[in-house]
Image (tube, rainbow, N blue to C red):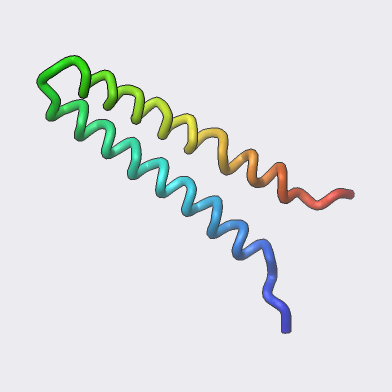
Length: 69
């Protein structure tokens, strides 16, 4: 009995979303605790890149894995 590849693909997309969410949380914590401008800018960059990952990577994976009709 073979396993459905959709289960693994769904798990991979969810893992990417969870990792992006954890990255955004890390960036917000860094942004909130930083006193100097350098770490604050790093926090903003981490949050922005994490939101980009959450928004684009799962969709790109789904497009890559789409079965041809």
